Amino acid sequence: MVQADSFQNPHRLVQLLGKPADQFTREDLIRVVVELGIEMINFRYVGEDGKLKTLNFVITGKEHLGIILTDGERIDGSQLFSSIEAGSSDLYVVPRYRTAFINPFTEIPTLEILCSFYTNEGIPLPSDPSYILRKAHEAFQKETGARFHALAELEYYVISPHDPTYPVSDQRGYHESRPFTQSEDLRVEALRLIAQAGGKVKYGHAEVGCFTQNGTLYEQHEVEFLPVPIEEAIDQLVIAKWIVRMLGDLYGVQISFAPKITVGKAGSGLHFHMMAVRDDENLMVSERQLSDFARKMIAGLLDCAGALTAFGNTIPTSYLRLVPHQEAPTNVCWGDRNRSVVVRVPLGWIGAENMIADANPAAPPEVTKRIAKQTIELRTPDGSADVYLTAAGIVAACLHGIRMPAALDKAKELYVDGNIFDERNREKLESLDQLPNSCVESAEVLLEKRTIFESDGIFPASVIDSVAGRLLEFQDRGLSERIYGKEKEFRAIVEEYIHIQ
Image (tube, rainbow, N blue to C red):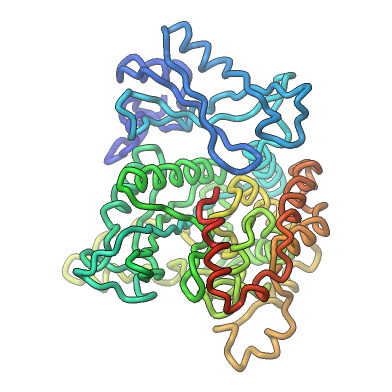
């Protein structure tokens, strides 16, 4: 048995079992229940609406526990998926052992497990968002021999009564410290609990967004993760959003992942970083620079940029965030370290290996060779995203770019050097395609590009139709222009979508 590295590993089940989560077995979880005195099990799963659902079990004995963990349970699928008719609606939910963690909020000892959906024939439900992501990753691995690794930047606002003792600086909250940020304790506790639940947390910090309005403080924060295989990345993102919201409830404050809180203030994105890893090599880098492989992935993401908003920007206020001069993309292009492009290439420590020795000249540490850290970052998605479908769409788009003829030419054509709004880039700016301006436009682009996502059997046609149909129902074409300068109308639509997936 491969032993987990238990040094400072905060995951309680990894500590107890002495193995990584991806090696958890049914017998392991039975042991957890017995040794920790677990009384309840919660099955959790994400339906078509992207929201987390719950099925509670009281454990009545070891035989009952074994049945739950082996067979899963039967549910009414017609309530979760529009493609399933009430006349034949039974589905199974079956636990994925590697996702198990101890609920940190319940007085009754409770084990949480994410589940997958299966049909009455015992096969994966084609429209299950987690299965769609699994198929996308399998297709990518088959084509490239590489695993698709990803991480997310989870941004959110904490909305609470304002304590004026230490005044906040409007839109100057980036990396602020207590006492000039009120919600640091909540963020730190979130980091701790997410890690205990198995999340591979990189760091947390206060973000730019910070303002007061009518005695209420709106304070933006961010939790960022480490790159892991994309299915694991999305599972831990679902759990992290739940933990942050639960903490807000305990602290008596509102948590909002909404893309836009008010006009003129920073919105909240859900940026995705990605890399492809083969034989412990990061394929984003070749000869100490961005590789052709990475440029092809970028070309695919840009070719699908408008359609990807259908999965990653799913409510009308998403398109109030995607406006010029707000560090959010509007033009389909990419660049280095530029926050107004669709795809950004962040600093990746290429050629910067000796900084630690310069900072510590008296005792420079020995630095061993490690996998390159370079990623590429998609900056369009926001907190309204269906995270499984967004991730599956990202993988499908990258696979499309790898296969696309003249992908390198497209990447070269759409590269922007420096600030996209600089005068020297004016001609380039005028030539670029624009992202959709509404849910309706997003749906239209998705339907135009649907064959890319349906390739390799990744997205069922019914899912594309359902996603597009929900977006079209908003009838929000031209919304931004209609409510421009109308504060009351803007506030009303923000409040309508303040709590999202």
